[in-house]
Length: 204
Image (cartoon, rainbow, N blue to C red):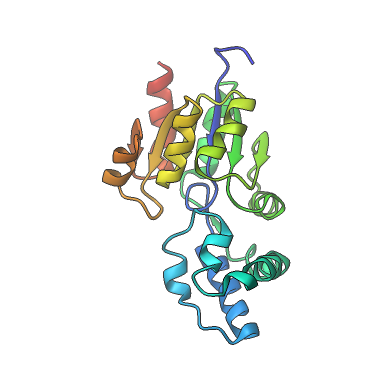
């Protein structure tokens, strides 16, 4: 890809979408099925890392693979409908397109679930890659020549830095500005509502 081409990557949960209501509903359904108590309010305050890491807080290690499969099986039923686009998400994608750029979503989420969310919300990035967390996000960012990666978690900052991409943090997830900057974020915005104006000034 030409070095001047604009390609911007985004994280998904709490960056492009507010998946908290849907994810809470999924964990409530798992708790009802299994009889295992899960603090669903706590779960949705720490979205970002791989699903297996969260499930390991509530189920014995030997049960995590089966619970992961069950979570993904019921995800379309409980997880898609309640999920909303984050403020500024659509406008940010449109701002990149208006500059002739390309957009991609790189997420730790199971890729079929990520695609369901984006289709449901009518947000159409050029590329969607799932199943990558933290530094491993750099694999997709490098492959597609992303020069900017936007995310709400320190893991997203680490992924951007591993890809030698500009790290743009948003404080709409579990990490505040101090945490994002300490992890190495180059820019921190309060939300994607600020992204189009920032992008315009950055390109200028």
